[in-house]
View 1 (spheres, rainbow, N blue to C red):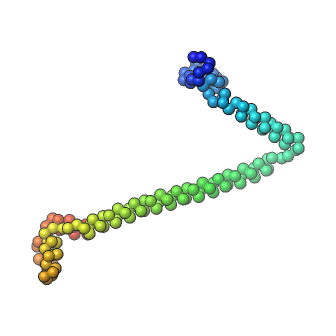
View 2 (view 1 turned 135 degrees about the vertical axis):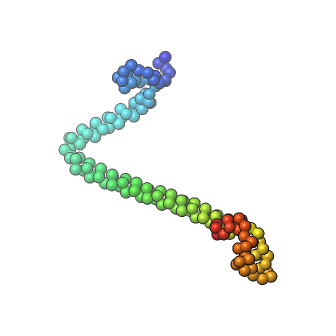
View 3 (view 1 turned 30 degrees about the vertical axis):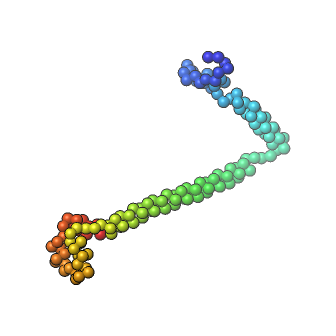
Length: 145
């Protein structure tokens, strides 16, 4: 393997060579930014030590406020997602209920139901006449209604 190619070597005899690998990693691309950041941190630390600032209390306060803000933000986002999911599930089941109600209303039924509709114009059927003519389709429609 030549040094100009970026390849990943999957088998290494020890873990030390994995940690010290340069070719095939992101280190050549970000080394300048890492060095600049380290110089900035060291300079900031030297200035704080020279001026005698105490960052223990201030850092704790800053960290506490930041964590509190993120926890509240996360709780609000979680609550919004919960209500969005609950609303979607409710709408889904309401739509299914409306569909099934519409289908039950539109069921034609059997022979007795057809005759009752036809006889409504001429006169009403008695309950005993209706139950004598009921077939399986009439029973299924009655159960679903």
